[in-house]
Image (cartoon, rainbow, N blue to C red):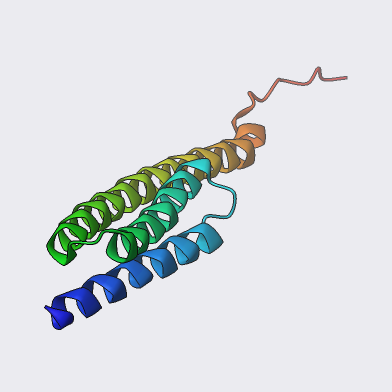
Length: 114
């Protein structure tokens, strides 16, 4: 039982660290920040569940459910942020390419001969 408790504590701490790293790497992306916040809060709640609940089995069950839910939460929001970032990058690249091509596409007008 002690090994399970230690593993649950380690997983909760890893989840808090993963949320912190995701927050740091988010660079202002609100979607990723939402996922990172959920991961940090979920990791802390898992640790609280392990400490506060008197029955170790109930604490382990609650911590497992909270940790799994928070990990999925972080993964989903981080993927959503990454997909949004890729779409914005591609749109920006298309706009830059269009700005470079636009002047050469202008029709050539015939000049009047004198």
